[in-house]
Image 1 (cartoon, helix red, strand yellow):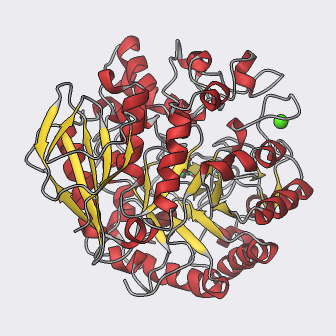
Image 2 (tube, rainbow, N blue to C red):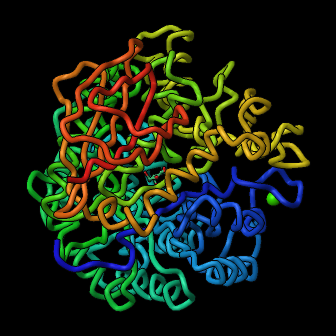
Length: 558
Ligand code: GLC
Ligand code: CA
């Protein structure tokens, strides 16, 4: 990697607006809530905010079903609120990144409505309308949220394709008219002042137009639709076209949500001339992908997790940078997922944050992560809102699990764990709303909230501020942004450690995830201790003693 880019040294924060902060008492977070917390985010050290979708939407998939790309959902406010957010962010030298959902739109979108009225007309070609085969859908694909990917179009022998919910029809990227409409829309937002996009489900835009059947892989006789995605070539041409017609002209930052990438394609995606600035590193998250669903997800041990992160870092640094995350709005909380129970404490939370945020990449912090929010406890399936959780529950039951077993899995894996309201204080509903929140508040809000952590210099929140400040400090910014990742102490059982180093500096990040203390000889003498989750300030000698859940960041430059 030769050229430096404006976004290389940025720290990003994901806001899921519906759950961030409600300012008008309707129980739904809003843009004014975001505006009111910009100073809080600035103080945390955030440069860039990714907003999960705020466009007009029926919210079948919580805004990932867009019915008007040019309008703000009234639940969140108005375009004037959005413009105010842009202006206020700019004042603080912060960037706003929009979510770009262009594999599909909502079935309420004007294009789809027009297509339904005239199933052989111009707008039908914005989507995939296909005849069935012998009274069956055109192919046997199962959508990501369950059931067939094909939905009959009333009054015809046609079906339309949807890889997600049936309310999210897939857009036909083969149609140049549709592509141009999307490019115009993207450029409109860039002209407004957003400086980039997080790009949703983007690998799905390329279909095999023959729509061949695949070997059934479940009791429903269907086959996961990602098998078609994985088997088809040519997504690169679309992505290149997209980039040249939009992002390139604005030097925009783009982060792709890319799953099922082909072997050896990484540099096409994030290399010097890649389709995107970066993509998310989901390697640790994919470890718990079940073959059929959450119910047969393998459990992940520490060594597997560590080795996966190491392998991923080593591979990525050969071609670019990825965006590193612990959690997002589609994943359970990282503290509950990646830490053993004994480590689900403030010390363990700080340790996990340190190991993740000092990796080579662009850190994305998800709302509430900076105070160590955890999975909620859920009593029954009705408490969940998430479309995917409901489907996963159904699949687990169909596979023969008991209600209790299926609930246990949903509690562990549900996307709603990340979507409970941000815990601002110990007031009713954690200060998120004065009304009734759209999704329940985690019952631990009295112990874990922003206000009480503000008061406590040892809190997770204060630690995150120090951690980000270290990453951005004039003295260490260079090495922590561009320095190579070099794994260390790989022969230990419960320690994860790595160096970030360049020709002048070497920083060691070392953490003990074990229950027992660990004793290790330093390979390079420490000059200075840069960060410690135990509040240590004295530079350690030749032998390091790490307590359970202890992390240290040491300057080990020659
Ligand atoms: C992405 C989003 C997820 C959404 C899906 C369909 O994976 O992150 O929340 O459900 O795409 O748009
Ligand atoms: Ca509101």
